[in-house]
Image (cartoon, rainbow, N blue to C red; front, side, top):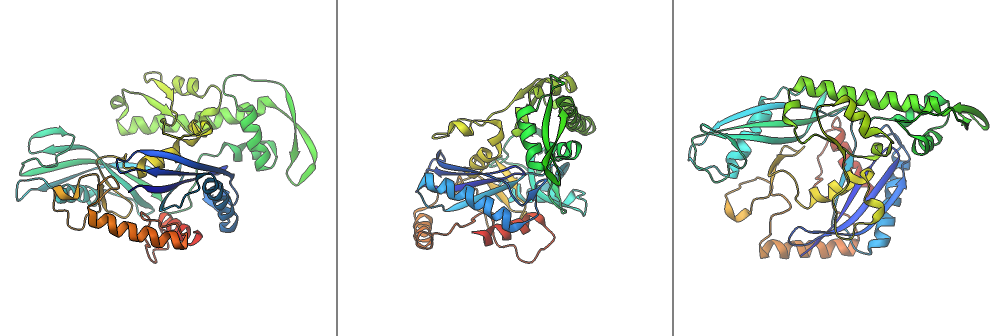
Length: 393
């Protein structure tokens, strides 16, 4: 039985919603999409829930109008430039020698426990990048192996508990040019350039006095954009140097997202990372994918679909500190461990799911299967977003 999922990318300039169907083999078929101008969202933070809700609902309704199908679950993403990561290690003994999902969960939870996560940060993902079994290193998947000791190296992704925010060239342009944000966004899209400079003068409305216009040289526009993008790459370069990971990324750097539309961005990145290959990444081909979505600006929302279809790392601890994986439930005693979306259900599970879907169809509600009610933790922005999103639908 297939699932119909909704992926929503909430950005500072646009909200994108895509509806797709996942079949029993995990293959995706895009059925509809909607794009709406962001309102009530500044620097990635929701500042006006009512306006943000309108933008999100418009994008979803447009997607539903094209798809013509009922949605069974949704996945939501919000950008966050203040996310950080750190590495940690966990070590456990294997009393029964055979490595099961329980042992993998235990060693990853130990690595998370050992990590020095700052109080102002919340863990979003725990991703393993190396397992060691007894004296054998660089094990990709230890499941089913026989050992007395297991270690894991993990990368922990964290986000600040304060407001979410992202790199905002538009805001810098608005301040430098003394023009409204929407006008600054249009200037960035139309004249964004990191290579060529121009002395051409354009007329822009003034903040607080939109009826009058002020002449602005494109040279100023170029300098503001260049300074902001260069700063971002320099911060990334310093971060890589400190992490000692620079020598391990032989495949190079992939740039994606709406900022890659800036002419010359690959060349600028290459000048800052001369020893690494740099390329622009675009969303992977998916059945039914509209031409409009085959653009780096939509990489996040396409990634949400792929993630929901089970295309994530073999093991992962999510922000609820539960283990996600793609192992078949019949191959191991999992206890209370959460199963990833790629697991094929038994006939009993399928029947339960069908009954649930029939009930949902009658009420035409969206069910956030992967966004449970988290209760009264008011400080966690991800959990606040979860509860707000559930109220929205």
